[in-house]
Image (cartoon, rainbow, N blue to C red):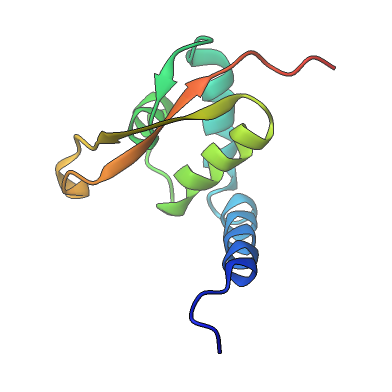
Amino acid sequence: MNLFDYAEAERRKEEGIERVSTGTSADWVRDAIETIRTKFHIGETLTSERLRAAVGKKPHHHNAVGAALNHAARAGLIQKTGLWIKSQRPEAHGRELRQWVRIPPPQN
């Protein structure tokens, strides 16, 4: 077995995102994406922490936040800034959070 298998890691990531997005956290993920659309202005930055606070309710599973951000990125609502911000929530122990920026919706 190869210790580093990028393709397998990506497959498992996609599987996890799908599982969280269609399970008990599906409503939270939909609410989070709608929150990004309606409460974050174009050019405004956000982190998983800011998104959780803006949604206003705790997700059923901690991975729902990442799933929502991945869906929003794929939908062209946000993109990575390349910056990482220290978490403010005590239970996050100061871990680094990816920063995202709200971008204009794609033109169809």
